[in-house]
Length: 92
Image 1 (cartoon, rainbow, N blue to C red):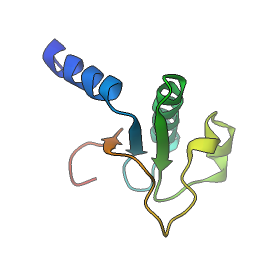
Image 2 (image 1 turned 180 degrees about the horizontal axis):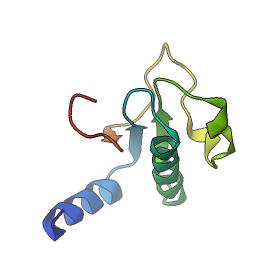
Image 3 (image 1 turned 30 degrees about the vertical axis):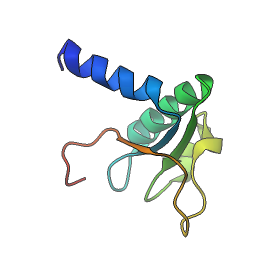
Image 4 (image 1 turned 90 degrees about the vertical axis):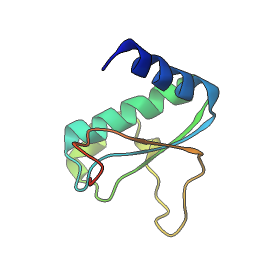
């Protein structure tokens, strides 16, 4: 990734206030950890951040940031920016 791309990501993260963070289908612990870490960092900056996962295993409950996991599957979490982490491609 070049500096221009990193600067654009930085700009989007700093200029927006609401984020929905997702990972690939059936996320493993590193995907869950990545999502929760970004969510915690954004919250520390005073932003709204929610992590949406299609499945969640009990083994991940030890990772800090559990309060960020969106628990209302029938409703969309608030946020204007979607961030997808730990995903090989657009297909998920």
